[in-house]
Length: 104
Length: 176
Image (cartoon, rainbow over the protein chains, first blue to last red):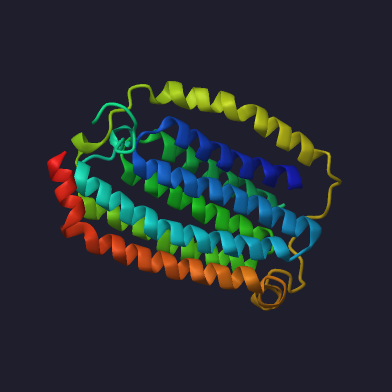
């Protein structure tokens, strides 16, 4: 009963929910966690196809993705702390320092 | 049969954790939902014969990254009134779902056309640490070295960002 399609369904659901979170939410922590969720969905897809083709390469790519996600976590969270210290808010709409036109 | 039940339970937990992430207003509950989801994905890695990735997922994602997020959420001491107001959240979630559904249908149709194969847990050493290490140091050596440089750059970057906190950035924030 477990087939390729059921794993692909779960992976695509995780990816889509992550993308919906990036679109719909304004809390910067939730956006970060949505990005992690999308990476998780892609990892699940890669490991599923590694099992399907009985090939080890996608698992190595998954290790690379996890390492890059760890590096991203360190940078992203320190930037969030700096932004929160200077603006006292977690709303993504007020981070508009690079906006053209009128000054914030 | 046993594996089917485990798979369905893990899939349910993974998807419900992800849904909890995008619906709760408090980021603490969102982080706990993500934690549940990541542990379920680790269980699926185990079902897919990726034993080393199962360990890495639990140690790095659930153990390190999510703990870092929870630590920073508690460290910032966010009050209820600091959270952004999201009055149109559910409309935007519905809008995002409408955008994502065609992509899902496309990929699931493409995957369903592939020939079926046996997905039961095999007894070979597929996914153990030794074959992964052999692959990593033979075919993926350049990528491995580049990732190590990336981690070093991220380490230095995090230290530099944490150091500037007291002087420049806070003054810029006070002026605006």
